[in-house]
Amino acid sequence: MTAGGGGGGLSVSSAPEIDHSKFGEVELLPLSRIKKISGAHLHRSWVTVPHVTQFDEADITELEKFRKSLAKEAEKKALRLTPLIFLMKAVVSALREYPDFNASLDASGENLVMKKYFHIGIAVDTPNGLVVPVVRNVDQKGLFELAAELGELSLRARDGKLSPGEMQGGCFTISSLGGIGGTYFTPIVNAPEVAILGVSRAKMQPVYNGAEFEPRLMLPLGLSYDHRVIDGAQAARFTNFLSQVISDIRRVLL
Ligand code: CAO
Image (cartoon, rainbow, N blue to C red; front, side, top):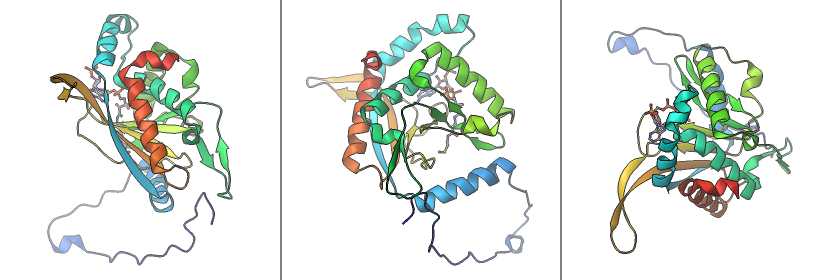
């Protein structure tokens, strides 16, 4: 079996052609160029990568205090320090702790290519569809530097001005719908990466501390992974570790 997974031998009958205009008024709109390209890539990942999604949640009450304490400084630099910037650093800590998540299967499907660098792809919603620019060497950058880079990349992504090279070479992707809403979702692995983190909107929740319920800001996480490379236990350990780091962001320094 090949890893990159050409889907060899996979055969499904084609969907019947339906004339929707028989049922009411319709209009034909061509898919955008981005949707055609990303659609083919997503479809290939969906059918060739055996997906499982592990859910978890992280207590970001302290992180939010820290983030707010930096807000003025960020504003002076004309930067937006969103929770996503902190998550990028926390993900690097988890990738260091669990290097199998920072790997790809080679073409034979018999070896793992272990990456010694930390390039994180960020899913960006644009008017023409989804693109995933890659922020390089996240381990070597500070929060403000990451905020500046992500701000600049997502602006250019929305203007359709990213070069193909800026969307290549990622190790792990984060897809954040936290600015929009929803509880949990199951992202599709951005192959040849082996895992992707889906982040949803944080919500204040009553959390039992052993004596009483306390209001805590909880962040929902969904980690989809390639089950050929990652076992369920490893995935649960990864999200557990990640949520500990996010809950006490000082841990990225360890
Ligand atoms: N919980 C609560 N609030 C959150 C949050 C979360 N998890 N994540 C972001 N927010 C807040 C931000 O702090 C910001 O608030 P302020 O305006 O008060 O500062 C607001 O929501 C909007 O954030 P944002 O979405 O503009 O910024 P971001 O850094 O979180 O994300 C980007 C940047 C480019 C990733 C995002 O704009 C985007 O395109 N997201 C969509 C990605 C997507 O489509 N994924 C689906 C792919 S399918 O797999």
